[in-house]
Length: 70
Image 1 (cartoon, rainbow, N blue to C red):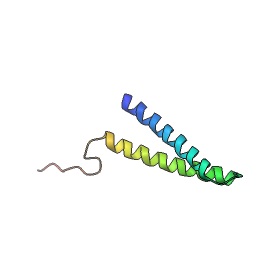
Image 2: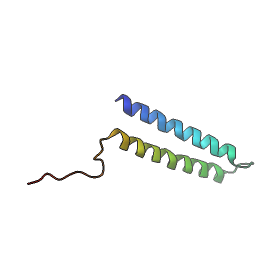
Image 3: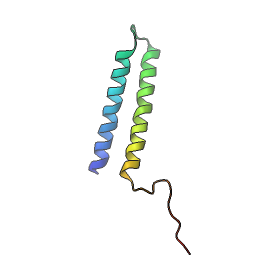
Image 4: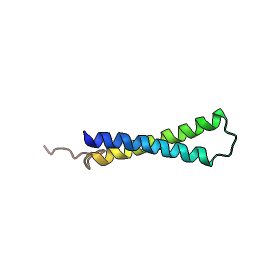
């Protein structure tokens, strides 16, 4: 359970940092579309971090498993 909580807080932190950096880098004045783009990119990066974090938590046979010999 603690790993899951740390992963969730990490993903929320990544979302906040990426969105803040993108909004800081965009030239002003910001429009609604700029906020939409920053949120979309931050969501994509957060989902990528979540995916990689879940792969790291699981064992090495996440995608491939050896078949049992008959």
